[in-house]
Length: 360
Image 1: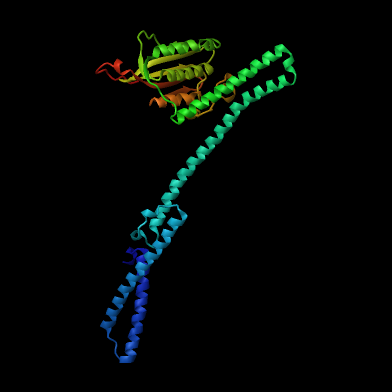
Image 2 (image 1 turned 120 degrees about the vertical axis):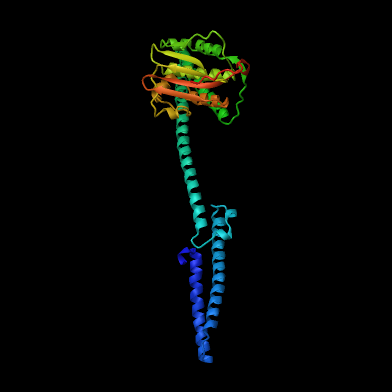
C-alpha cells in the first residue's frame, strides 16, 4: 500500500507512525508505572488519533515548505512562469518543477539552435557584403591614387582610369540599390501596385533588353511556342519585369555558348498561370538549391563575380514573388540546365465562367 503513496505521503506517514508509536509507548509505560494498569483500547485510540493528527500536520507543512522554496526558484531565477504553479501540484518528488524545467530546457535548446543558425548566417552575410563592396572600392581607390600620383597629366591615361573608376562606382551603386530594395522587401516597406497587363508583351520587352547580352554567347532568347493572344495577369508590372530580368540574366550568365533561354506560360489553375524560365546551361547541384535565394549566395563564386551582378538577384526575385502572395520554384540538373518558375494571378475578368482547372 505504501508503494501507492506519493513520496511526500510516504515520508509523512513514516514520520507520523514513528512519532505516534514512540509517544504512545512512552504514555503506556507512564500509566503502567503510575496506575499499575495498561488499557490497550485507550492506547490504540490514542495512537490512531496521534497518527492521524501528525500525518495531516506533517504533510501540510512539507507541501507548504516545498511550495515556498519552489516559488522562490520560479521568482528569483526568472526562468519559469510562477502563475502556473499551484500548491496542490507540489510534492517532494518535485514533479511539477521537473516538468516545467524540462519544458523550459527543450524550448531554450530550440531557441539556442535557431540563434546559432542565425549567427552563422549573419557572419556569412557580413563577410559577403564586405567582399562585394571591397572589390569595387579598392578598384576605385587604386585608380584615383594612381591619378593623384601624377598619372592625371597624361590625358589618355586620365580618361581611361576615370572611366574604370566610374564603372567601380556604378557597381557600388548597383549593390547598394539592391541592398536597399531587399531591405524594404523584407520589412514589407515596399508597396506592390497591382494592375492588369499582358505578360507576353512584358516578356518580349525583357528579351529586347538582353538580346545584346545574350548574343555575346550566341544564346537564343525564345518562347516555347507562339503566343498570338495576350495573356492578362494581375500584378505589379514593374516588379514582375525585375523578376523576369533577373531570371533571364541568370540564364544567360550561367548558360552555355550557343544555348537557349526558353520562357513558357501555362495555366496552373483556373485563376493562376505559371511562368517558366528554362535554360540548357551549367545546372545547379542539389546541395546548392536550398540556398539559392539567400542574399549574396553564389554557386560559383569566382565565375559569377566575373560575370558581375550584386549577388542579390535571386533573393530579390523571391521576395517580390512572395510579396504578391505567389510561389517560386526551381528545378535543376547539374550539367543539363535549370528551370525557374513562378506563379501569377490571372486577370479576373479574363477568367471564363465554369472554366476547367488545368494542372501541370
